[in-house]
Image (cartoon, rainbow, N blue to C red):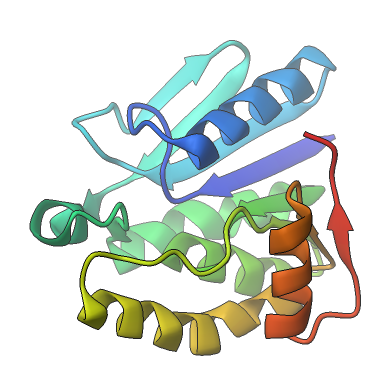
Length: 181
């Protein structure tokens, strides 16, 4: 099976979503699946590499939100994002997106829907309070707008029951599956 994992942040960026994606990708590759991870390029990482049987493609991106605001929200170059994702989505048997609020997530979910490719969204977090009221307001707007893209996924899941219930209520989803950690 060809599996496309999409995560805005990935190695060398360090965090929970990055580690979850890495463990999932390597586990799927060990089981014989063809796994590609698409993420934003951060920290001077190579644009393309292979690690532990997983192909990793990185989209050129701005790290301005992290540098200026301390928010790990990479902004992918729009054309590069679509040029990278479009052919990979068409070839994939399933697209698995990590967290709905990223540009890469929205692009992958829209492309999967347009191409009739099954998609899974793992929602990792609910609202995350920031140090500034303006950032909280921006996040609320994003959750109310971009967050609705969760409805494009064929399956929405979380490994945290509180986040699963939050996503179900927030985006009026019929079913958010709870995954064991």
